[in-house]
Image (cartoon, rainbow, N blue to C red):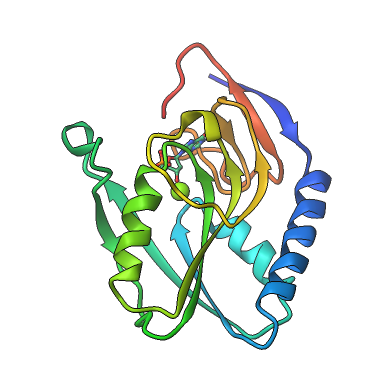
Length: 178
Ligand code: IMP
Ligand code: MG
């Protein structure tokens, strides 16, 4: 019990970087509106912090997915637990994620979103673990590339715990989930 957490990125570092990424997004979307799609639950903390710093008009929507488990893991097919409330047609969609790991979830979701005829779809992630990639996913905005370590905080969990940590840390235990 009582896992040890080693800090990888401090609250200040994360905060500063979110500001920089928000400025980049504000420049890129000048004259447009952003329809932010958050993938629950992990993306929620990042989306809130990011959205507060966006100066172009923003609308928000949320979806929740769960993977089908090992048999279909290679396909990356996910079950939609909660679908979006709004249609995507004609919108400039910005998908906001906590982390891109193997890329399976995102490659599936991005394809599903394109089927709904948005004007554009871009991906913004707090963290990226490029070493773990199995599926090609184009990451348009990334706050931090990190090494292949299991991280928690800022929305990311270990067995549903630690999402509320205001920094990114590594859980130091004997057995780690995925
Ligand atoms: P994928 O492998 O890119 O499909 O990642 C799917 C999901 O795995 C992410 O959205 C996270 O919810 C979770 N995940 C991947 N790496 C980590 C990690 O280091 N900590 C916590 N969750 C993770
Ligand atoms: Mg996620």
